[in-house]
Length: 327
Image (cartoon, rainbow, N blue to C red):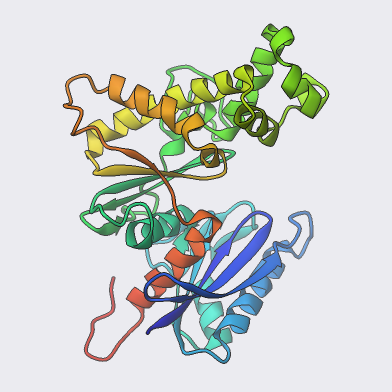
């Protein structure tokens, strides 16, 4: 059994795992992500990653360390080109981890790592061609085509959240207008729920009971109300699901994947989101036979996916006797 360490660097916590070659997590380590308002935030984040890597590697037979980060990873998979939330710019993260642990290390984008984990061990394990979509505050994406992770020329392949979904639509933080994530994300879910609550206040009792006021309605409020059967909250999910399915139909026309694997916090609502998305996906592909429309399946590995995928990618990239190192 071959072991590797995987570390997923999130906005609130750093999750590390010692992972076997069948995807089983044998041990975990959790640390809070250092506060971003600190002048030492960038260095503190690196120290936290090193601490987690050492804690999991020491006393084990781990062969490599993989680190998944929310940011642009350079094609060498050793440097983080940029990670605004962590204050990094061309950070030589793999070298730092290698110096600290004595093990070969690779760095990967967090959505790519999660997609690889789902392809290898989760909901996408039956398919060679998978598009992973993470629906959280924004939208992330990653591509596994022909059984290989597609990174693109600069490492940015699969970043579908900023494809234009509505021409001249809502402004996005990226500087464009009408981006996909403005209509099919957790942010969009909250916006639609607040709008519906203002338009139909007589139906918004469950949301007002949870939040107290329209402007205080949050994503968890909408999810909890919808799961409890609230019709207005379910309407918000239906609107977001409609946009999600329409956007995925465009991707289906371009990539023709075997399946879409949908993860992220908003997707934990299951069929409240995926039901309307599936209906819209089929409706937007009228010339496809029903058997050819890619299924939308829920991700299976939860918040461990990034760490599991990072560990497996590091294991695959690490030198072994008689085996060439993967590019």
